[in-house]
Image (cartoon, rainbow, N blue to C red; front, side, top):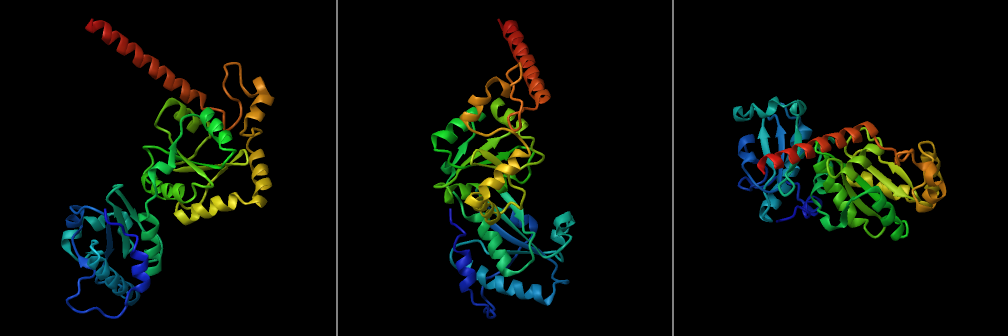
Length: 320
């Protein structure tokens, strides 16, 4: 598939003089017509009767970029006008109350995102580039269990691990995964990236319960035997800056102190061997966070699983 990666170069090199009248740049289109197109799409929803001079100037700059994109074999940047009655239903959506708004749809991932930043060319270029640079899927590992995570962590000489937690309930996880996958590739020499599917196996589900997540997506960085949560805005640059900052030597002691306020546990085998049975209750369940599971939720799932097994066994008997 054709990549949008040259877009930044196109922006930097774009001629911002008035294009020729017959040049194809920004292309007017209706919302429904655009939905029928495939591939990666960039569209600007605007109101031609209310646009300011500055907004029109930005559109003019984008016109030239779009013209060059067409010459390179890309889709043009599409313009969807509120004044076109064919678009009336689209502009009823709440996120088009403030115009103009730019959206980008990634065809391969089937992900659509809305740009929240101010409407200007540098922000648009940064927004688009942040979303279309693909990473290598093979650089992101699947989480199996907490025990395997500990083994992997120690076998790789305690190389830092980035854990990306997702769920089918999460509306933004598919888009955020693009950024995480990109970082998994660019940082793979220094950080291992794992994806934890909280709707997956029982081990994955239990681990998601143990770390007391309050929302999805969720990022944890395991480094120096302790965890740190990411609380910023999910962009590639923000997450990369956070990771590199957390891995600085001067942050090591601070991270340990912050972790000590949440848990007495240290994520290494020496700790678990030293603590021994005191780390677990009589039923073998870990006492501490992040090891402490959501017991009620886990027991409910086990009951549901046992009931399902009983039903299947009964159905099998009936067939026999």
